[in-house]
Image 1 (cartoon, rainbow, N blue to C red):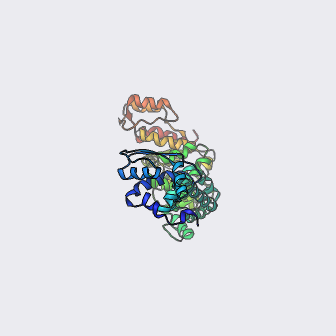
Image 2: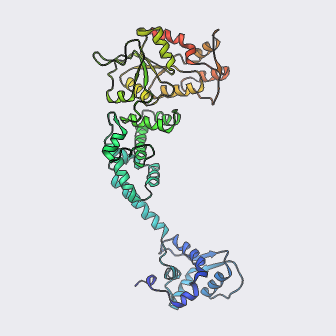
Image 3: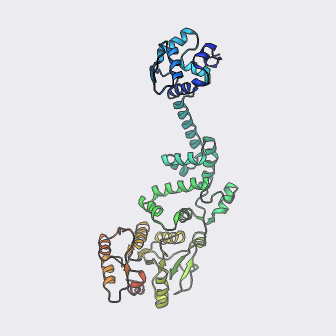
Length: 427
């Protein structure tokens, strides 16, 4: 048998074995574990030695025993002495005879990484998942969720099944999970497969978006927390999560002849995410202006004062959630010219940056001159600006004016000007 598999010589046991010298042997083993067996370690510097450990090393090297706390060990000389005495082939061999094989940590890490790479390559058979798995963050996330390469395989396989089934055309998330994973809660927030699927979808969006910052802005600036952001990602993949929450408020949105209309003419109507994804309306807005406001009160006032004469109007109800985002995307794809107005405060500027940047909307009475006119109006009602300053991406002059006056203007305070535009449909 190999020397390391043979029982230790009693003389070796007396020289270097025993519980008292176990800490010394552990230190020596750690030195060897950092290198593969074929790497020559000429010397080892050992400090903070206790008296017994130092005495054992003196006996091992043939040096006189004297009080000391450190020693530089000539490993090659020790190897030769042990071999000549017939105690072991080398110091490494002696340590293995006494306490078992020394694991090559470097090789162990390489072997483990190879197993991870193999598991990811074999089970990331969906092109979208495979593209994401090639990134460094992906490998870190997979390792954190699965802990071992063997556990990663079923997770990746399940994630691939889900991604292959997307877009889901308005299917509830729980139904999709039950059908593909055998567990209706398998795609709930925080579950490993859901985490992998969402990460792969976000990676795809960043690379397919015409402007990568749009998707990043969605994640970093959208109000409502992580649950709302995840709901938006699922919605863009055609999967319904809490499909009746925060429906989109609209007024006079036109559809093609014969298609179901969203509400009666002149009356506000709500469109749920469920309806927008399951039965997408056929919007007749190509080349038309569609106005977008931030606050539901503007829609109510427009309905009361203009009714059927009001131009097409959509409300984001603050930062757009899944239903509002889906509707704006549908309108953009249908050729609508989106015009956006919101509050003149820092949260309002944040929302405007998202709407203008994500759906190619243009500012609607959201320039410095509009803000200054509102501040200077005889009947102006405003309050002090609060919070962190947000730069208006479309107008540095607006940001400067708001910082200069320090006044926040609610959208309802300028609704008279907005109604003029909404009445002049062809303006």
